[in-house]
Length: 252
Image (cartoon, rainbow, N blue to C red; front, side, top):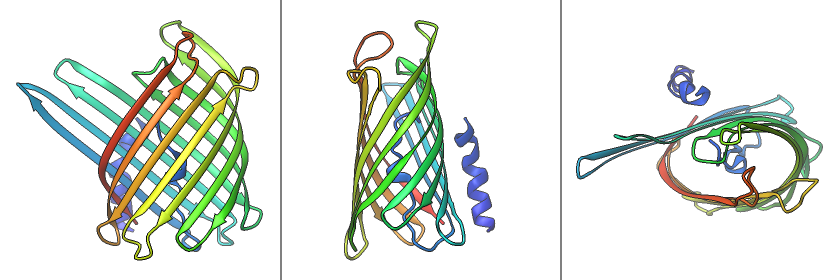
C-alpha cells in the first residue's frame, strides 16, 4: 500500500494538469484482480548546437472492479510536454473516466466522460460524454479481439475562430491483442473511426500499435506508434499527427 500511495502522489500532478491516447491499450485485462495501478513515464533531453529540448510524457491508469467482477471503473490521465529554449512546442493533457458492466463473457455496456487539450491541434480542447456496447468476440489463450460502438456528445473549442461547437458523433473501434506463450512480450493494435451523425464526411481516425516487453513483475519497456487524422476541422481543413514514443511503465 505505501508503494501504491507513493506512485499516486508522484503522477497525480500530471493527471490533473493527452489527446491521442488509445483507451483500449490502457484497459487492464484481469479476470480476478479488483485493484490495479499502471504508470508509464518517459523523459528525453537533447542539446542541438546549444539549443536544448526537453520532453516529459506520463500516463497513469487505475482500475477497480466489484467483488462479483461485473462492474469495472477505469480512470486514465495523460500529460505531454515538449519544451525548448524558444518556449513550449507542445502541451497536451487527457483525462478519461469509464464504467463497464458485464452482461456476460461476450457483451459489456460502457459509459464514459472525457476531457482533452492539445496545443498543436485546431480543436485545442474537447469535452465529451458517451455510452455504448463492447463485444469480446475473440477470446483465446494468446489472442483476443474486441469490437465496440458508442454514441458521443462532444463540445469542441477553437481558439482561432473563437468558437464553440456541439456535436453528436459515433465511435467505432476494433482491437486485437497478442501475448506470447512465454508472456515475455505483448502486441496490441487498435483502430478508431468517429464520424458525425449529420455529416459522415466529417470523421476522425486513430490507428495505434503498441509493444510491451516486461522486465520483471512490476517494470516493463514499451513502444507506441500513433497516427491521428481529422478529415474536416472547424477551419475546413484536414489535419493529422503521428507520434512514436518509447519509455518504461510500472504495474502494481
